[in-house]
Length: 107
Length: 123
Image (cartoon, rainbow over all chains, first blue to last red; front, side, top):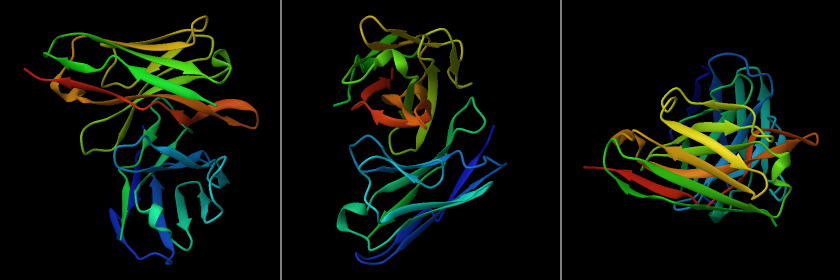
């Protein structure tokens, strides 16, 4: 089973700043990695798939990079609505489809 | 627009059973793999099960294998999760999720989600 480790657990930033979130896989997942945003009381929302492709309707300030075992989600010019929990997920080696433990982005 | 509506959650005793349903609309249901993903209170996301678009193939997380059964009815656009021998650790919000399209093919990311059905297992 592939284990995804996200860092940091919590990231404290202000609106307008740039957030850099990390996801590391226990073995290579090629580029088969996605990022999700989840706000309290809501279902997750797909942001990025295949490491760097923005999902439909996702603003350009969200970008993903990486391949193999190390991946980054970058959120430029943070907006107030961006403060949420972010998860990475792999589809390279399944079952199971695995998620990271999450990074909380707080003000 | 794509819509997934989860239902069937509730409170059940350990060892009991529950059946969740997900009603899909706004897309060609029979063209997409469908999943259940759960989230325990205050915890992260855990993938539970997948059923392929034609319903012939299913896979499960080890934690639920032999107790939870995923199924679909492509004539009714519905996805189900039969939950037997429930344990306290199965307490979670259960989401049905539709796969994304990757280069025009259904792939193992979760593009659309239901609103969730809360399952509480408690004595």
